[in-house]
Amino acid sequence: MDWRDDGILLTVRRHGESAAIIDVFTAGHGRHAGVVRGGGSQRMAPLLQPGAQIAVEWHARLSDHLGAFRVEPIRSRATNLMTNGDTLAAIGAVSALLTVCLAEREPRPDLYAATVSLLDLVGSAPDWPSAYVAWEMMLMADLGFPLDLSCCAVTGTTEDLAFVSPKTGRAVSKIAAGPYQDRLLPMPDFQAGGREAVAVGLSLTGHFLLKWVAPALGLSQLPEARTRLADRLSRTILHK
Image (tube, rainbow, N blue to C red; front, top):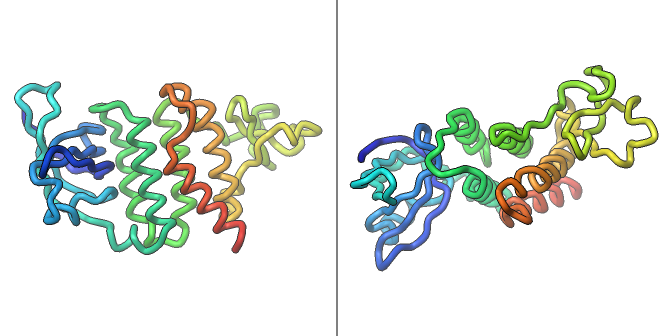
C-alpha cells in the first residue's frame, strides 16, 4: 500500500532509538499515523515540528498496518508560531483538538482547508484569535455539533441577537430572552470583533465542546492545550 499527500504535522513521539511516530492531518487521508525512520535525530528535529506543513509518502504492506512515512518539508511556520507564547499555545490547541476529535483515516477536506488557513494566519495576522474561534465552531459543525447563530430560536428574527441557549446552541434575541438572560450564554459580537468578542467566543465554544463533543468522545474534559490557550487569550484580552 502506498500513497502521497500533503498534511499538517500534529504530534511527534520517539520510537525506539532513532525513529519517531508522527500523527499527520492529511488533505485526502484524514488523520494518519506512521513511523519516520531517523525521525528522532537532531537532523530531523527542525522538520518535525507540530504545525509544519509537510509532504508525506506512506507505505505499508497492508492497509491496516501502522506503516512508514517519508517526509518532505513544504512550510515550517516556525517563525510565526514561535513569536510568542500565545501562538505556541494556539498550535498546541489545534493539534490537541484534532488529535482527540478526529477518527483515524477519515478524510475531512473542508476542515483540513480551514485548518491550513488558520495556521497561516496564526502569528502573522493581528486578528488570528478571531479566526481561531471561527475554526472551533467549524470543527464542531464538521463533527456533527453545529451552533445555529443565524436567527432567534424563539421569534425567528435575525436582529438584536444577543444570547445563545446553553442547551440547544441556538441564538436568542435580547427581547425574546426577557427575564431569562442570566440563564443564557452571551453571544460574541462578531461584527464588532475585537478582544472582548474573542473572549466571549472562546467561552461559548468551550461550553459546547465540553457539553457535546467531549462526551461523544468519551472524555470528561477538554485537552489541557485548549484550556491553556483559552486562559492565555482571555487573560491577555481582558487586561489590555
